Amino acid sequence: MKVLVTGTAGFIGSHVALKLLERGDEVIGFDSLNDYYDVNLKKARLARFVDHPHYTHIHGDLADRALVESVFATHKPQRVINLAAQAGVRYAAENPHIYVASNITGFLHVLEGCRHHGVEHLVFASTSSVYGANTKMPFSEHQPTEHPLTLYAATKKANEQMAHSYAHLYGIPSTGLRFFTVYGPWGRPDMALFLFTRAILAGEPIKVFNHGHHKRSFTYVDDVAEGVIRTLDTVPGKGLHWDALAPDPASSGVAPYRLFNIGNEQSIDLLRYIEVLEHCLGRKAQMEMLPLQAGDVPDTEADVSDLIQAVGYKPQVSVEVGVARFVDWYREYYGA
Image (cartoon, rainbow, N blue to C red; front, top):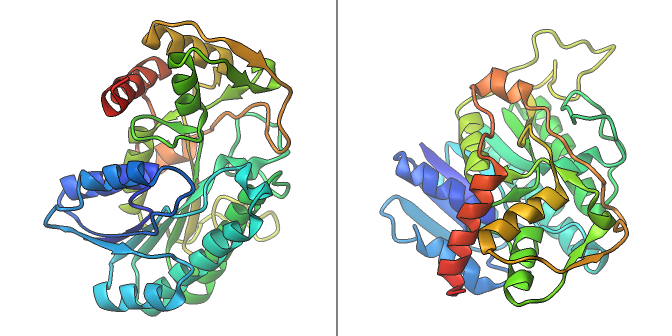
């Protein structure tokens, strides 16, 4: 297939692009290489496949309507994976406008491209953050998500609703994927595992919020990439048993549309996660215990039964294996 993948210099996007190329697909990569974090890391991710004969890279911003229109018109992708977004939960407090430009306006341009060029299937990244104030565990796609706690989560919830409306109006098969705490090699420097590793190796204290009482469905990046590709290959239809009087948020009776969680079913205590990291590094962490941050949720736990039923796959890499692989990559990449 010819697949347009946005965010190919990003953490998840680079892994997805590489997997698609390895199985023989043609990939049109799109990324702005913005400076939210280390641009050299983004370039290093791209360097793994940018010269592949079936890869074409486009440097640009999804908020650039004319550019996005020209990419669809020129390359005519059969399917689209939208992973580009302004990431980071807390950065939205400093720069809310960039979240709307990238995550809302940019996504609209992707939807319009799909609409006007007969795209067979749109897969797009959402987030477990949409569950917001919900505390019923495990989080299920069949639960309502009307109370996001951050602007980032609100933009992703908006993406889900925008995609459903386009699926209904224009028949664009669309699948939204709610990722749960993704980690692993080539990760983002603003995320906990990266920050913890850097601080521990430097002999500096790590900031442990909520006094370490978090639980998370830590999900290894290769598991996420595999889930993305399997859902790309599974085009949704309208829900056969959908009830308009009791609508199911995970599917639709009026549009070819689905939502899936992609997360590790085994929720892990943050202190256990840190313990595994200490073991892999051979060093103890100095912990600065802090209260819960605004907009953060104490626990996440993923129900992936729908993903298993639909595509026959679930994330399975343990934190012991995943953290060890991250540490090996980190030591090699940074010479640490």
